[in-house]
Amino acid sequence: MRLIFLTGTILSFFSVSSQDIAELTRRNGFKDIKLGNPVDSVKGATFEKDIIELKEFEAKQYEINNPAYEKIGEAEVKSVEVKAYKGLIYEIIVTTPKDPRIMKGLEKSYGKATYNLRTETYNWHVPKQISLIYKGLNKKEVTLTYRSYAMVKLMYSDKQKKVEEIAEDF
Image (cartoon, rainbow, N blue to C red; front, side):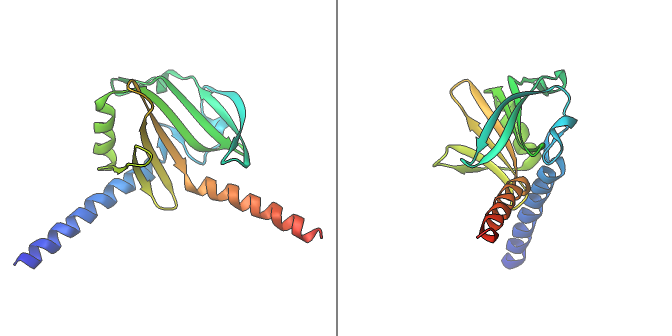
């Protein structure tokens, strides 16, 4: 009898976890800003600056000014930025004042986060697809960082192609 109960408990845990992960994958970003979509598809995107991502990839950072992104429910949003590689969004950064309702909403949508003591962040991730990182910047602000693994993989793939082109030139 105990074995049946234990097995049922474990299976229900995994089914709840997979539903939460599926929701993160389904949403694939913040509101209607979707990872992997062209940055031109985001209303209110303004070029901010050129950046070097991961110390080697040329990318662009955009600030998003659109009333649709000023609130998460009743919670305020200070800023929304996106980073794009070859015109495609690979990272979305949402900065908000520290508000416990945001973390509660994230946990309701995606389940319990994994806490990383080394980086002092809460993490949700779908392996090889998407991650969401909740990090306190200071006592008053937090950031939500959505990142596409597929886009980062594309960056490294493009780098490998360049290396192969150089190798063929010898």
